[in-house]
Each structure stands twice: as C-alpha cells, then as structure tokens.
Amino acid sequence: MGARIQFIGLCKDEKQESSLRRQLVIMTAMVQDGEVSAEVKVELGNNWVNVVRSNWQTGDVIVCFAEQRAGLLHKPLSQILRANLDVPTYILSDLYPLGPSRPHGFFLIALWIGFVAILGGSFLLQIRISALPRDWAQTTLLILSVILELWLIWVWNKLFS
Image (cartoon, one colour):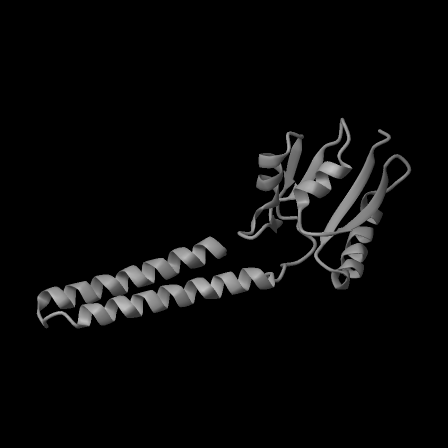
C-alpha cells in the first residue's frame, strides 16, 4: 500500500537513548518489507504532545500502546494525545514491548511527600484528640481518624499508581 511508518521514541536523557533506539529498530525490522517503509526517530524530552505535533502531517494516523503512560500522574498516553491533539489515534493493547518504566525521580518525591504529609497530619490530629477527656467520644474520634488516615493513604497511592 506504500505506507510509511515512523516509530517515535521519547526519552528523558541520553542514557536511555541507545536502549530505546535498539527496541525501535527491532520493531521497525518486524514491520518493514517491500511495500512498507519504516524509520526510527528518537527525541529527548518529556512532552509527547509536542513531539507528536512536530512530527505529524496531514493524513497521518497515531498509534500508541494502551499500557504506555506519561506525565506526572502517569496517565495513559492515548488519553493525553486525544485530549491535546485532534488527530486520528489508534490504541494497541497487550503489545507494549518496552517493558515497565521506572518511576521518575520527581514522581517518587511527590509520592513520598504526600505519604509523609498524611502521616504527619494524622499524627497531629490524633495528638489533639488524645488531649480530650477520656470517654467514648475520644475513642470514637481516634478510630475515625485512623480510618480517615488509611483512606487518605489508599487514595494517594491510587492517584500515583
């Protein structure tokens, strides 16, 4: 059909570039034949929307993996592209070849700051509650504060997973 495929990779630093390029070259070799030409392009950065926008041409179709995530909150890449670009986007599921990505340093710092803030805030709240007269109200408030603390930890973890 004379199709031209461009595999685009985005990496945060030069250390990842050679590994990513190798993986994309393997994918290129799997789809390239006499009627289909494929090429590889690896860019440095962390903004998929800008990279896709700068490489997209009229008539192109974007294909991405359902399992691929991007951004601070690790949202699905397909969701980010669809929300920010008005281009045809297809999503392939259960085919993600690049393996699980490790969390970014800023992501881990934000995650731990949130956990520490929840634990610290809960600790301060429970100290205040323990200063109340010892009766059923104090016990009930302590139980409710622990339940709230566990729920906040669960929500925070869910947000970053």
